[in-house]
Amino acid sequence: MNYIYSIAGIKVLLDLPFSISIQESSKEFINEGFINDFDMCFKFIKTDAIDNDIQGHEESNRCYIEYEDGYKVYFRPTPKGSPYAYTECHNEQSRMLYCYFLKDNEYSVNYSLRICNMMGLERILLQFDGLLLHSSFIRYKDMGILFSASSGVGKSTQADLWVKYENAEILNGDRAGLRKQKDEWYAYGLPYAGSSKIYRNENAPIKAIIMLEQAPLNEIRKLSPREAMMLIYPQITIHTWDRRYVEKILPLIEDLVTTIPIYKLRCLPDKGAVEAVKKCLGGI
Image (cartoon, rainbow, N blue to C red; front, side, top):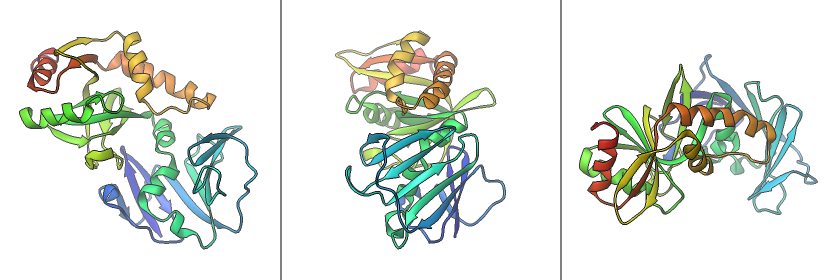
């Protein structure tokens, strides 16, 4: 069967020998059928066995192996368990990605969020001049504003304040896909949204990125590219163990912090924080 998984403006053709269960988070992102103008193809292939004697970078229930121009990612049910599937890209410049899964184990890979995880969204974005940013993404007057910080600092709270006081729209409450297209940076909603459960397949040109810090007052200042790089880098999904990945994403981040205004907002969870941002952005 064929499906089209559309994420961050990238159309991925899913070529599978089974139907998939489309979860609520993916309903705006997946359609059944085939199109000729897809950007990538993710092909699923049955296999009788998967090697368990693998050596690579272990993270959670995955093992990453880099080789020549490609890579493999093995997926396990537990950190020490036997792999039930692996994805392989023979060449990172190609537009083909393969998933080899154990025969009669379709149930391990046949639902939409697992497929998105196995695609490696951060890698696909990187192939198309994009990256993943841990942030709450709002659209206000057709512009994107992103609030970024570590978990618990108040990204969702600031986004909610803009909805309450400025009738902004939240397009995602936890992560956004950022892509540079035709010399302009855009933010995209994703099928990952954390506890916000807001999964909108929509986008907006980025007006500003706001790095948050809790404080007993509301104050905002624009960051230099160097300051912005230091604060935003930890909030971007980066395979730090993969030299090729780091070498490719660093110029993108440098372009982002020199092209997009990035601010540091020390704030309270109140209307004053919204007013401080509006004033700094020219009273939008």
